[in-house]
Image (tube, rainbow, N blue to C red; front, side, top):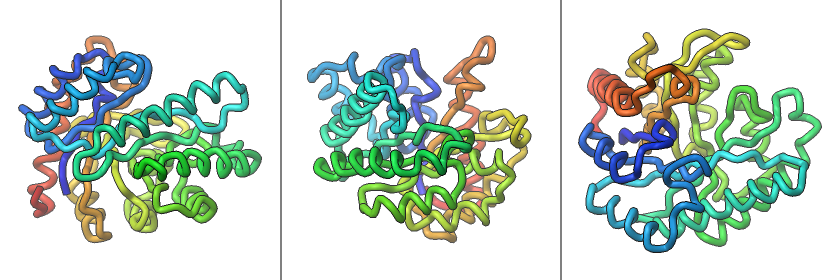
Length: 278
């Protein structure tokens, strides 16, 4: 397995600064966020800038396992859905352009709420099916993230969806913290998804629904070595990518570099404690 960092936690940090920080800390790769309020928003990068960033990734020897483009696929307002569709398909196009050995996965969340799941099942299948078809034509994988508070929030719902949209280009972005916040253990939530996991996010959690808080790895007492061993024993050998939640970013005086450093130190130690090489 490898250790990565998502620029989700660095919305206003220039990409060169983010790449240099992530490299110098010792991370093996980076997930670049391309949403509108980020310095790497799709609309802010012209062709020359996209090519420059691709070259920077190679210069810094940083892998690019994923792009973050979290956008609901179940909005019913035509204008809002159109904007999200352009965001997601634009991320797919960029993933194809930034391919290293293979294109990075495009991470997104489903949208909707847990209580809407039964009602919006047909819309989930229709919209995700269309997105996956678009991505497949570019050789890009869509990595859907089961998310606490979303329509796809539990492993069983994710497995149902995978049974409906049967494409090798639909996979799972597994962020165990969303299952942990619902009181599910690693053993009962991760191995069942393992055949479909293409990427992960890692962050800490304090508390459980309805009252919980996401944390930076290292601020919690979670057994990260155990989590890594379960993932490895189940067959995962991809990236464990740190994601710093918006809950953390909203704190007064938030320091993205300090959080990236704490997370790296915590997870690098967890790799060693688990007896895993990177």
